[in-house]
Length: 545
Image (cartoon, rainbow, N blue to C red; front, side, top):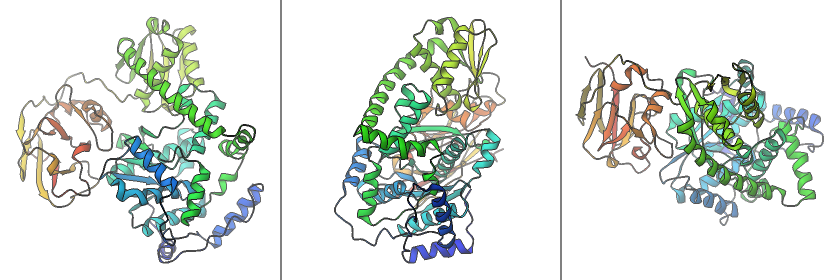
């Protein structure tokens, strides 16, 4: 949901774009958090936000941080020329430095940028000031910006989650929605090496396996359901973390050297929050007694990620013989599962959770060990509750994880018979396919951005013998913003296409390659980019007789 700004906010954004404002530094050191937060909040009331324009200083020589960011992007092949990246900007030092670095590197990398900011509804006027700051920064850089607002407290009560977990779920859902609306390949996040160290310590303190010890990955994918828009189906989001090998000290030095200002969230000094305690007390203590502790933790994370990648390959080989999908359940052969090594058991359970819930982010080692104990020695009928509404149920010869799977078997009668014909697409013109009509036209610019029944495609990437047909066994597609192909079956399930209609659903192809499925996504390789000269505009409707 985009925030509709009032007159005062619009005036503020205008003021930001016209001149720099002098930022009042925090009046008290963080050792006095309660008084600090009080005075900082009062300062916000009289000074809604404070900035410094990022263009006031002449461009300096290429900073080490810029080289590290470019190395991270190139080394992991995060981006292709012409890609649009959503940049998540909270207004803090990390995200401001990330935005500025990507802005400086965008001509060299061929990246387009779109700024995104979410007000979680937790901090009143301070949050409004942060949102205005981010809007002003985006306008200064002449970048498009989307600002959203969500009520995280209400969501927390509804779902029974902790405040941080509810905020994280809401934030990723907002980024996924915005990325889909603007056609972004994914979202860039400002997590640093310090954030990685904090995350690893928090995971270790609660008890974790390799999945937790790998911490955050430079390049990853996440999926889930937006609790405020459940009718939208599952979302998928690709995440980029170019600052993950860069320390917070390097980020702050970059901000100083480039004359960048940023917002300070007073809650970052509240040591009653566990992450702040780790950041302000535990990590400095570790560095004092073991210099280089942060870098050592980062090395451990990289090694754990490599070990986990190997184990996941072993799990993928075991999966077909031990597990099967039955509707909204993953079913395991109990006797065969008991013969496995405990490590294999753990990672099969993690994989089942990933397939059911789309993520293992909230799954702790305690959840997994409780499931292992119950499935190994518990009574028949015993159950174990897991996050995201998943539960395990033990039977006589099998046990099952029940939830809402990403995969769904495609069995049972169809209300509409399969359409095996392949009909050439009229360009320009209309093509009738069963109950569907596909209209096509060529233009020199996009026709629409956020309509799932409309597709804009780069015409020069297509072989000009396009056609429309029904789905076929083994159909796969590389959806917009996703690395690698996925099964068309999965896309249809995620898009909530009724099972009875899937066989008659139109699939638009170019020389056998799927380029669009109405109501789902276009192919990533056929997307419109900055130097596209001719756009093929397709629209699907069910108004055919």
